[in-house]
View 1 (cartoon, each protein chain N blue to C red):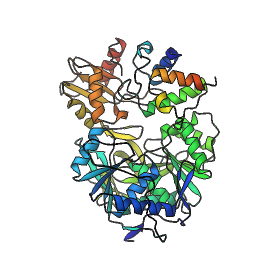
View 2 (cartoon, chains in turn brown, cyan):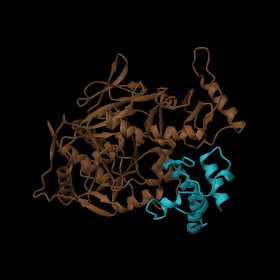
View 3 (cartoon, rainbow over the protein chains, first blue to last red):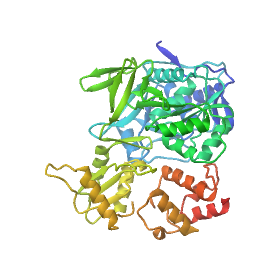
Amino acid sequence: MSNAPLIRLYGPDDVLAWEAASPRSASEFLSDVAGLADALPDVPSILNLLSSRYEFLVGFAAAMVRGQVTLLPQSRAFQTLRRIAGEHGDCYALVDRGDAIDGLPCVTLSPRQGRSVRSFEVPHFPIHQEVAVAFTSGSTGQPMPNRKTWGALVSVARDTGSRFCLETGRGRAVVATVPHQHMFGLEASVMLPIQHGLAMHAGRPLFPEDVRTALADVAGRSVLVTTPLHLRACLMTEVTWPLIEMIVSATAPLPRELAREAEERFQAPVNEIFGFAEAGSVASRRTVSADEWQLLDAVTVTEEEAGWAVRADYLSRPVRFRDRIAVIGQRSFRVLGRTEDQVNIAGHRASLGDLTRKLLEIEGVQDGVFYLPDPGQGSLARLTAVVVAPGKTSEEIRRALRLSIDPVFLPRPLVLVPRLPRNETGKLPREALHRLVEQHSEHGSVHER
Amino acid sequence: MEQEVAALIVHTLKLKVDPSAIQPEDALFGDGLGLDSIDALELSLVIAQTYGYQVKSSDPEIKVMFSSLRSLARTIEKNRSK
């Protein structure tokens, strides 16, 4: 296989997307792609920030037609977008109507500028064509680009589909609560449907009632692609749920009890995907019945000098696991724990070192650190920052942080202290940090959050 | 009602702030209290449980609703079923 089609298993009139309750057929999609491809500027990289999942796909495909690479920033923070754009030479942004990003050429998608395509001809792309770049926090704290070829995306999508028996997806629809600019979102909510003839819902439902409406829009068999956070929210809500055929969760570990409850409530299997931006999805499990992760067909795990790594034909080199794992037999593994520096908040991953570095870059901040407290009961874990910044208010620091980091990582609380409890080697013992935060909370000197 | 909703926000999101210190017209998201979409989701669950009102994004009022304590309290008052 040296080429792979943009979409697969659709007839011209099959539904490829639901925009709310309005269907968009596969042939309409191809004409939307051709029309936009004609209109895109001649620039090598594109930041696709469209909020409709369907429009994002049209933009993504049109960029591929033009040989352009779609950049997938980890966060929508303004400075991040500008920096990524700056590092990728000539770059423009595809944005929703009415949106703009200062300092970047912006293109909007005209409503349905489809060029009529005479026959139902599906474009094919070389599997080695670089089509997307996902960014992750590298060990130095600088965002690292992870280049994705068309072959990598197609292989993961097809193997995930066959793992979940979606090979004949016709008549099924994918409803997703995850952002499509996220690596897992791109794989499971965009690539998975188009490689199996499934319809995708264009929305990105947030509230449980939104999820219910989206499921009702597609009126039929549906696959819900979501996160533990959204799944928990849905389970806490007393509404009558439309039929769901399967739930796929990723981005954070799904507690088994939550998976069990979801299986009972929705009368559907809950599958979990394990992956990370550098390698993409690599394994899956049905959470209620297995601790072990089963590797996707094209993936193998090998022991390299630096530890366990993922190999696949579509990866240019072995990719190290971010977690500590134990390999069981040939095709499965167990996760032993996360590496200390990595945190995952609501599906967004960051390095504490990177966040701390950004904190220290703020004018007036003399010392400071981000850390993740142990999660309280039933609440979402949020980061805490302890900061030394004489003369500054926590609000000023928070405002500065907002410019450089994704809002989910904004610390709560942000505690101002006269000095950090560094030990003789300059390290910050977690216990000492924790005591300090408690102390400052008790005395009421925690400044807002 | 505003005080009640302020207390609900502080309790639900475990904010280190006195409910009475939240100004009715202050922004809840972004530069104000600094809430985000995860907080909105958490709040929506508690609002549904407490007042029987299912928040949804397609609601024309949604943007206004989460803009301040005052508008949140008003929207809940208008749509509550318990």
